[in-house]
Length: 192
Image 1 (cartoon, rainbow, N blue to C red):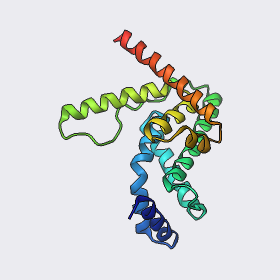
Image 2 (image 1 turned 120 degrees about the vertical axis):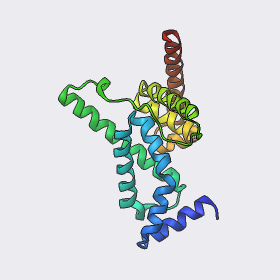
Image 3 (image 1 turned 90 degrees about the vertical axis):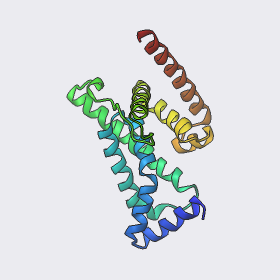
């Protein structure tokens, strides 16, 4: 059975009240959604909050999934919307409390498949921390495009549909983000 057909079967069972099907659906996507959330928020605490909001949104709206697109696309669209909402709330709170964004913690460790060797784990953790810190230097719009293009392997057209913008705008944001990431990388190399 293909992943798409398996997702559809799990969705149907979950809609009929199967807690097992819902749990299996969550487990299938939780790591991807968490990693996506970490890359967008920059820290594990906010990423966990975002992930919970995403799955709560999926649970509440599962009956609205029509199957026009893959379930993975649909869930990442929800994640995108929740990330934008969280960023908007954070900015509003930041403005109200006059908190500087630099005060928010940056995640140093990303979960994922690492080897069993401590040196290998440390190297992966350090590399993931660098990536997260670099992505934190981008605007949310740029981070979203980089996330979808690089980490989710979506096309510019798919990203445009998900974000309700033109493909040219997606390309512009992506290449501007790459240029900024290159500058940040070069800056870090000079400082090292």
